[in-house]
Length: 210
Ligand SMILES: O=C(O)c1ccccc1N[C@@H]1O[C@H](COP(=O)(O)O)[C@@H](O)[C@H]1O
Image 1: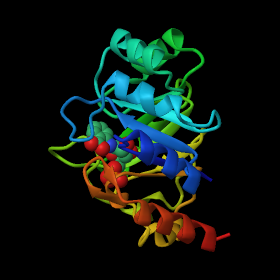
Image 2: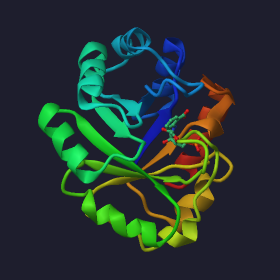
Image 3: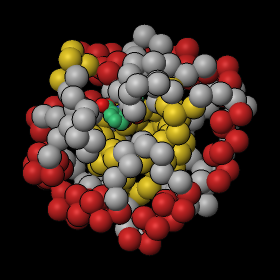
Image 4: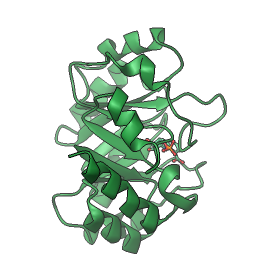
C-alpha cells in the first residue's frame, strides 16, 4: 500500500519519514497554508531523498504555468490538485507535464458528490478523497464518513485522506479499501512539524495488519 505523508517542511524530517516507510512525501505549494514551502525548500528536500520516493507538490487553483515552473524547478515527481480544478484542467496539465503523476483531490461533501469522480478518471493517474471543510482546503484533521466509501471502487488508484492517525488507521482500513493512505495533521506536533514518534507508530499499526 502507498503511504503518503504530507505537509513536510524540514529536509531532515523527509529523510527520516522515508526511512520509516513512507512511499510518498507531500509538499504544500498553497501560499495560505501554515505548511507552505518555497520551491528552493522543496528542491533541498527532494535532493536528499532516495529515487524510489514519490515527491508530490500540493496545489489549489494554481495556473498550469505556475505548477509547471515549480515542478520543473524543484524536481517533484507528482502534483496533487486540492482546489476546484475541473477535469479539463487535469487534461491540460497532463499535456503540459506528461511524465508527472497527477493526483486529483476531491473534498467530499456527500455520497452524491462521489459521482463526480467518474469525470476525472480518464485524465488523472490517481484520486484522493479528503473531508470537506467549509473554510479550509486541507490539513484539517477532519475525517470522512468511511461507511460512505465501503463500496467505493473507481477506475483508477486512490488515496484515502482526511484526519487519519495512528489511532484510527486500522479502523479506517477495516471499512475502506484504498490503494494508499495520506496523512498530514494526524502525525504532527504543530503544522509543518512532523512528530516522528507518531509516524513510527503509524507504520507499526500498518505493519500489524499484514
Ligand atoms: O495541509 C495543508 O495545509 C493543505 C493546504 C491546502 C491544501 C491541502 C492541504 N493538505 C492536504 O489535506 C489532506 C488531509 O490532511 P489531514 O490529514 O486531514 O491533516 C492531505 O491530503 C494533505 O495533502
